[in-house]
Amino acid sequence: MTAGYESREAREQYLFFHYGQPREYLPYPNGPHDAIGYPWRAVEALLHPELLPASARALDLGCAVGRSSFELSRSCRHVVGIDLSRSFIRAAQTMKRNQGMTFAYTVEGATRRTTRLRLPRGVHPDRVVFRVGDAQALPSRLGRFDVALLLNLIDRLPDPAVALQRLIDDHLNPGAQLLMASPYTWLAEYTPPSRQLGGTPACSTFDALRDLLAPRFRLLKRVQLPFLIREHARKYQWSMAEGTAWRMR
Image 1: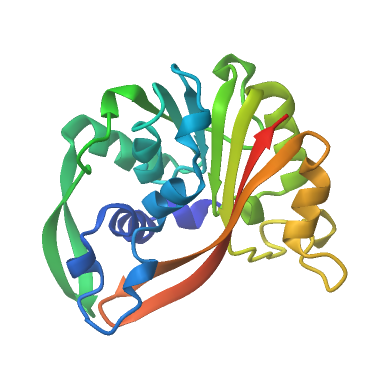
Image 2 (image 1 turned 45 degrees about the horizontal axis):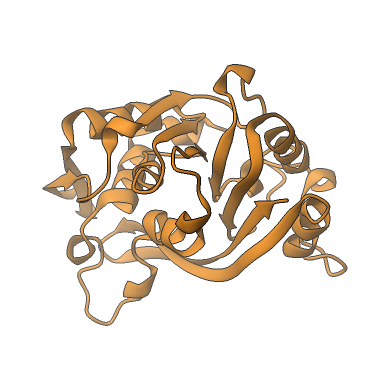
């Protein structure tokens, strides 16, 4: 199930998704430009910096190639980005080490164009570390965090309820913010139907999350976040994620 995320194609797609300049990513004036920049727009939309302690620690689960981890470093003193893909983590570490990288993207067919990807201004790469890891089996040595971010992750876990419960019990401080966004694309190849959170006529995914979290969390925000994944210059996937921000009581 994870093999696809180790491929060169996946790595390049996600690097462009996370760090591509809007004018290169979507070079058409009549496209859905409000859907560009999802990895940083989600952090801006969901994080409440005013509620963070001075030395806040953040955990970015399913960080992919790292843009949201760097965005968290604007407000948090220490950020740990974790992803199951070794290819993604190597790319994130390269972005941190070199403040960017030369990158080739597909225009159409065999036509490719080279550009330079750069870290955005104002982030603090020295505050960020990246590690290969499994969101379902986080080691205790990670410690506890004041923010946990899960972007497009819960519908890619074998047992999201168990993963969330372990995260809450073992790795979140009192008052921590739990930030999630997902298009809720439940697929049996990732999550067995019996372990999917809602997604049924009787219970939406939001309802299932609310039931799971309500005893220990207060809902801070619920927003709709469009995002755009580029395959090549004339083919894109437009999706709508639902973002929720929760605070532990």
